[in-house]
Length: 442
Image (cartoon, rainbow, N blue to C red; front, top):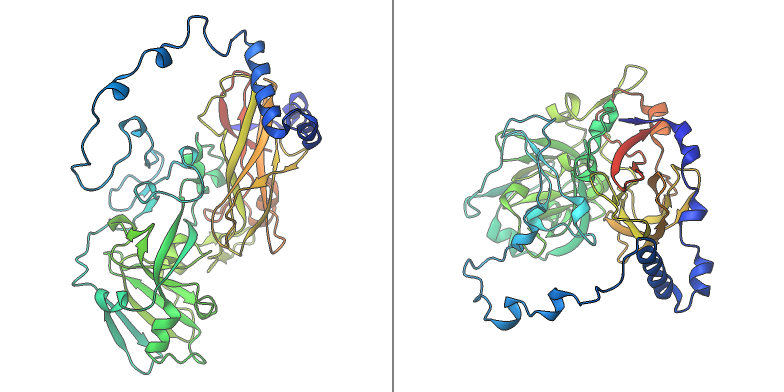
């Protein structure tokens, strides 16, 4: 679905819809008082009252859970979400490859809070299916330009000093369907190949130093996975020397899930997910890029001049509004909190701007803490919807000064034949009835 830019003339301008900070300061009770007033105005406008005359039966009549005995300690031993949250799950797109062993599942970004993705909702990308590998039999080999080739068991790795860090991981093909002018319906399908976790493991540089790595001649490492696709990727030593790259076994306070690489995976902050090798079994130090099959035949883009864009691993600064977003419906006019996620593979998110008129006017959003490097950042903005058609966008800026581009700006450089690394500004159209749809501004 495309959206004619000439229609923007009928959309409310941003200063009329965003809450003016001066109004917040002047309102009785400050921001909280302003929000209460906005809700009260919405109730009056719809003829609703805060409470029915005869009272709310859900308050007056005590429910079973207030009068009876609850359930015993969870018998399964591992906690599960409420049955009322059963709809919050990762999903496969009907428009992508349906081969079970080479598939994608998307994280429900629109249903999550904060910045951490629960392990059970973490997006998946498999090239030849996932495995539940016996950790007692798994090995990690280090070879190449090292004085002492080494083999580690999981027990030996877990004896070493570990670190824990929060980082996002994004598939290079995230938002890829938008390259082909396909406006998929929800935020889960547009941006759901994105997750963020606390990862625990050993810095790769520690293991290389233990093996006596030649840090002068060694410029790249080859990381190899143990799954049937033999996924292999080249990682520059410049990333590894910083200590950021981890050989990880932990995720969100527990061992990795099998679909996320159990018992061992590589964590390469800021770099596309295909380089975060799962089921990691070998690290080889070399003096030049390895040119593996997934670097020369896949994960490349055809540029307008006919050349291939290769080794384009960094996930550039990007953001998306998750509420309101495609597939959701605003219940009525009045106050809403616009919220979303921003991230950058080059560092920290410095600022996020939000527009409710298709990019004509922008206001700076609040960044919710914590704001960490190469990690998801939650942003939010107070907004009063007047019931008119509205196009909502977000634009992120990182601490290098990079500004997230518009769709037109990205196409001008990259053309239209790309698949990967689409970090263009996302647009959501709010229709007069409150329905929110994915649109592409031209």
